[in-house]
Image 1 (spheres, rainbow, N blue to C red):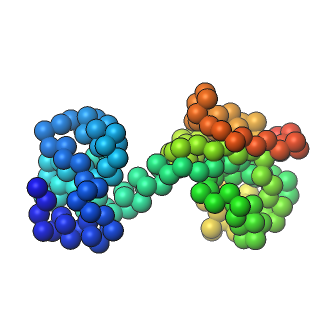
Image 2: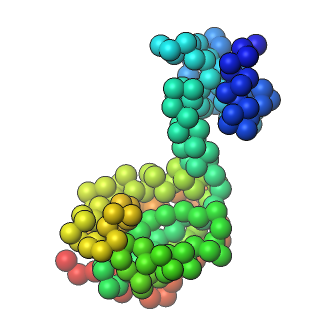
Length: 197
């Protein structure tokens, strides 16, 4: 079923033929759903313009762009989605972590976005944390902080928001959906992060 080049590619990505779902003859939607239900991370499908047949669950050619594999893994990873805030910079950050014990110390240690006063305001344990983080950020793209608003640290902090906790929480809650999370944390002082405009 797989060519020697396809097997070599899989090995280079630490995958095996057992990670591949044969979706030839199925629509993109069908093969993505069937592969996910079968626990497969790669789909064998019709060749792309370059002759490659290995694709993500969403139909992207992984041989043309291996970053699609990392994106797919990140989007389907279980973890905590969170909202953190900085009072000194009046910034909000939506993120996700697979290691909740290191999340707080990482934000503070790195002085993310030039702020040293990050506080965890909200977190929820979800199955597809990367996808939910991305959906929430897309809903808030009009509030992305500019380099001028961030100041020092702007070059590494491209995901900071100039918005309120309430608006960020609404976007994250909408992305999560009803009843799809557990182990929810809400900081008592989160109202301080509804910055006046």
